[in-house]
Image 1: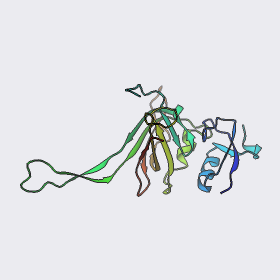
Image 2: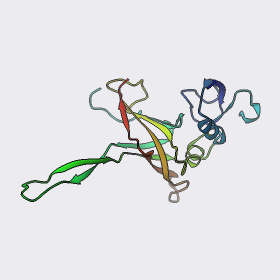
Image 3: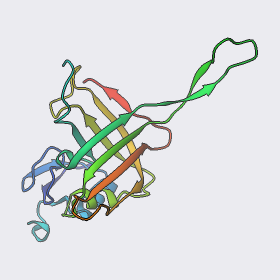
Length: 51
Length: 139
């Protein structure tokens, strides 16, 4: 599974990364979907989801 | 670590660090108590049965993006479950700061609750996914 780069766009840290910061991870698809749908993270290139 | 004042517990659910929304956390590792007492016994015979672990959290409700409500409501009834890791402190896992980890499912979630004038709380109970139990680790 290839790593992707994410930005924490929610109010709580994700994978040890503080809100507003970016990190790389290889989340399983279901986990990635839940985190993005819940507003915790966005793909780093997806500017529309950033604060 | 000797006896300690619980004030920095770490709770990470589905990779989201919800620690600063946690009022209380309880990690219960339990085996069912099977009564194998037979005639002639002078005391009860207890046989450990199936594991029946659980995590009980009392959370300050927060409906902001990526926070309590968004994180938990998305997992209600998801059979595959997600991973939770609880530690006594936010420091790295060690012999004196063990982690308690399980893949858990959310069966019951109070999205909104409280009395007038009080903080809105979200009590949550998480149970291990079928066939699993809480694992304690020190590294």
